[in-house]
Amino acid sequence: MNAMLRLIGWLLALALVALPVVAVLNGWIGAGQWPLRKLRVTGQFDRVDEALLRRTLLPYAQRGFFAVDLATAQDAVAKLPWVEHAEVRKRWPDVLEVRVVEHRPIARWGADRLLSEQGRLFPAKGIEVPKGLPQFAGPDARVGEVVAMYNESRAMFAPIGMEVQRVEIDQRGSCTLGLVNGAAPGGTEVVVGREQARARLGRFVRLMPRLLAQRVQILARADLRYTNGFALSWAPATAPAAATQQQQEQS
Image 1 (tube, helix red, strand yellow):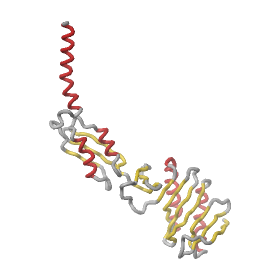
Image 2 (cartoon, one colour):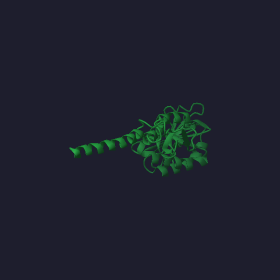
Image 3 (tube, one colour):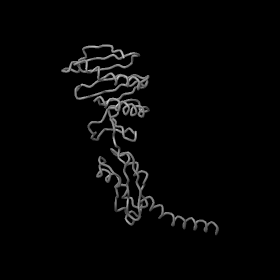
Image 4 (cartoon, helix red, strand yellow):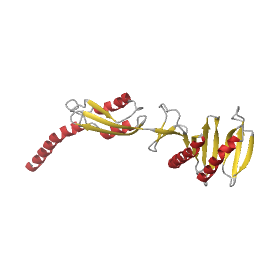
């Protein structure tokens, strides 16, 4: 009996010691004694809404220094528009610190997403999309291929005054570009295909100034998927949407 009483006594003593610790760590008590009074936001960002960021963190900060759930708070911040990465920490005695890395978009992706300079896709819904971004499309697994094709083709066409505004790669790896310049408001679609894409583009870029100089119409479409040439569709300068002529150009 005495042994049982001693065991019960030890258990009660442990409970009396442990219960306040558990209560503090879970925010049941102590939030008023160890409050998080300051929110420190670091990182360079232009589009993340700092007021929304602070409102998001407020419920977590109210639990106090010991009870704040940093992992959950960090996940909540990471889900905010324009946030690519977030780190939430606490600093004794009363500081909740959040470091934010903002998405830097380099292109639109499909109908409703953007592509960051880190190669990450993120939703465009509910945010103001910057103007002038190129349009990319393709399977998510081909992000690297699309970016590589954009960079290479842009370098090829820039010397002849053409700007690459659209790059699409389909499931099979077939590529299509969209070009614009001041003389062709409707743009030019260039179907590159899947095989020997760089070689086809290089040949087309070399001949394009000569092709454009020979015609007064706007080049609406170029299909490069030919062994020895291109299939070209031309449109009147006053109506770029109506293709009126096709011809085969031998290289």
